[in-house]
Length: 140
View (cartoon, rainbow, N blue to C red):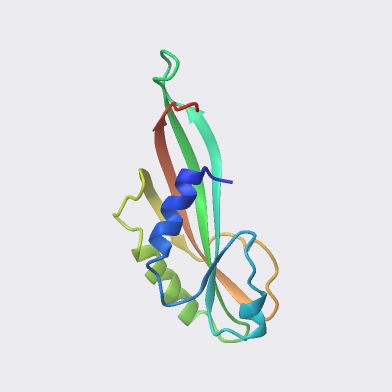
């Protein structure tokens, strides 16, 4: 899982996306499946590494958190992938050339990634965002 800082940055930006319902890890989505929602987004935000980037006095070092965010666009099985691709593209536009919360996103793709779980009667197309975040040591 990512740091709360990275998660909050993505969640704040995705709050502006009102075209589809958005659900995150460990949130209920059965209501969308039961209602046969025409499309929705399942979000997974992973912090893959948290590495020290500088060496120096305690409390004055830079750490780099790297991660991947999967925006799984869910559309009904058998409905094709065109609409899912359009939604995925719209989602990526929220983040292209627009750093948020100290995150830099140098690489994005449509159609790559693995769904986090099996969603009955839905096809998943992932919009994938690779990101990094630099942070000065802050130990509470």
